[in-house]
Image 1 (cartoon, rainbow, N blue to C red):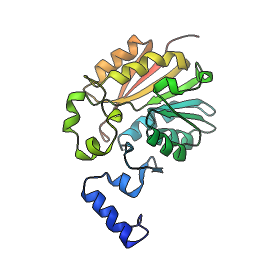
Image 2: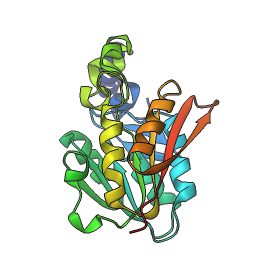
Image 3: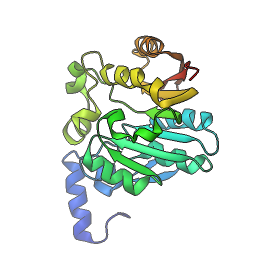
Length: 230
């Protein structure tokens, strides 16, 4: 009711919600880490559990760091980093043009459109202290079991992680050492069931992995420290 400007607009919102559209897309925003993140129809809705990923990244970032929100969606993690880390140089990227349009409203930094690292300017290579990627990690065969809100109203590319759910995670982990500073960190959300295989992918890419979980939020995060010296 507070989001609607007229009774007719409220009726239209109620109709959209009743037909299965995510509430956040209907009202045009989602709450995330105390921020209001602007959303458009069809854009991936930030999950509450992903606040744990954002918190882990914030704890590692230092004032003035270069931080990147890859697979940024509406830019919720990038916005949270910018709000919490003094003088952070925030960059964000996503493949979906609708998500990028939202992220440019939410992230006080540079937002790019493209496929993973291809979207980033070459000048960031080797300069990133904290790289966060909320990659898709639902196995392809399990997409049909997602709630209708997700599978019908969010981009498939934001959900489908390939046969075992880790296809995009492996690509991000493999490329991360080229973009991170020595000792920099890559952080990715995954499921508790996938954590051992995800950690192995980090290690194979030259990252020292750690697994952290939040029982309260039902969240699992893999953090990898870049072992390259230069």
